[in-house]
Picture (tube, rainbow, N blue to C red):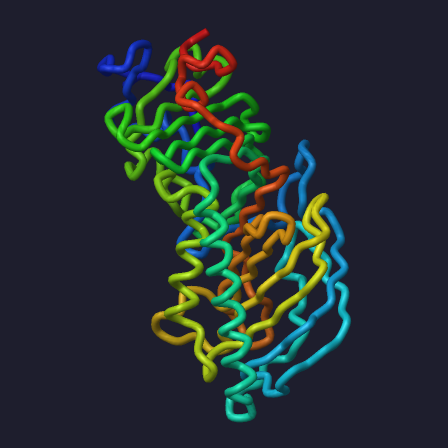
Amino acid sequence: MFQSNINEIVNRSAVPGIRKAIGPPRSLSLAVALLLGATDSRSAFADGGTPTAPSPLNTSAAGTASRSTGPSGSGNIRETSRVALKPSLSSVKPSTTVPASAETAKPTDVESSISQALRMIGECKSRFRSVNDYSCDFYKRERINGTLTPLHVMTMKERTQPKSIYFKFKQPNRGREAIYVEGKNNGSILAHDVGFTKFLAGTMELDPKGWRAMENNRHPITEAGIGELIDTIEGRWAKELHPKHSVINHFEEIQVGPHNSVVMIESIHPEHQPGFLFHKVRLFINREHGLPIRFEAYDWPRTPDGEPELVEEYTYLNLKLNQGLKDIDFDPANAQYSFGRF
């Protein structure tokens, strides 16, 4: 991302100690893209790279498929299955077989399952209204131009009003930081790299939707966070889920990292139709606090006998709610942060 050719860092901004990166050279790109949270119903981890920080994807999860309805056409199906959460989640098989036709589906069963999914995401939204701020360990990977990015592990803080985000990398580029506060800093992201590049560039201002910030990223930082994820999933499910075109599976007692009281909702569109964003979506809700802690999205298989392709996934572990985060938690002047050149 940042490289050694730092030849167009100019124009001191209105923020003390901050410099703005301008011009087209890609050598200055701080891939804040790698910092951002996912909404738009999309997120990802998968194979590739050996993480140096603990990964929630290396944990096995035992789950019970409590309901499976939809075009698979079996009404209520109850069976016990083992669901393994691995770095390559495309290897996890759904507990039902999707038929070529939806003619055998039982509409009342499908509608009931869709209603349950919509009710549960609505409950997540209601629960999040009571959240003023939170911190967590944030794991992220996305598929960009057909290739999955390396696993990114960050410390994350978010405040809901005004929307404020802080990221500090654990891997890769340990020590990199970024801050975004809605309505502050000229609407820019404040970010710095590590090592020699930090010495040369200092803290930079980046347009959240500019090419530098969006390079190697699917979503801007302005759309980061659990609340945005909930809103997007609720909107997509309300628009897309239909008894004739959807399979809904519910899994209980899934384990995600240290959390074992997790329910997973899986929505599947067997056939690719206009307006459908993904082939398969999985949402993991921690029953302890009623909020999503994991999200996965898959594209349709490229071949008739192929596997769904993981597109994006996010995981939020060690979630701590309503800690009373203050302005200083989203200020580069915070003595615990490392903005500036030294």
